[in-house]
Amino acid sequence: QNVRKPPAVMLYPTGNRAARLYRGRMSEEGFTAAVAQMIGFNDRTVHLTHKSLPEFLTGRTRPIKVLLFSRRPRTPVIFKALSSDAELWPHMEFGFIPEEVDNSRNPLLDAYNIQTVPQVMVQYGPDLS
Image (cartoon, rainbow, N blue to C red):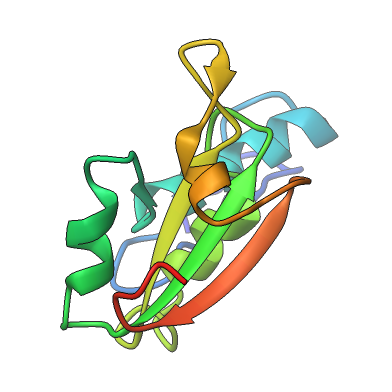
């Protein structure tokens, strides 16, 4: 396993990728960042805008759409993990919609009548209603 000196932490990614020796700081923050980076590697989340939403909704490959409306500007790690889960992504597509775009309220929140965030919506089919 290429461990030369204990303590050592091995990181085992999902799929066919090889395990690797963690070389960062031995702290909670360091481990968290390393795991988040591994999860982000397979991120299949689509960042949605008013312009990209219709194409996202009408895609027929994965008819179930999961939308996350969030106050965060970037996709949370747990949502990235769900979007890359081998049991889910063949059937579902994950979209991320931040609360603010260019320092103003995202118009997609009004299109879906979202008053408070965070909020998750599961939708089947292309209808906005």
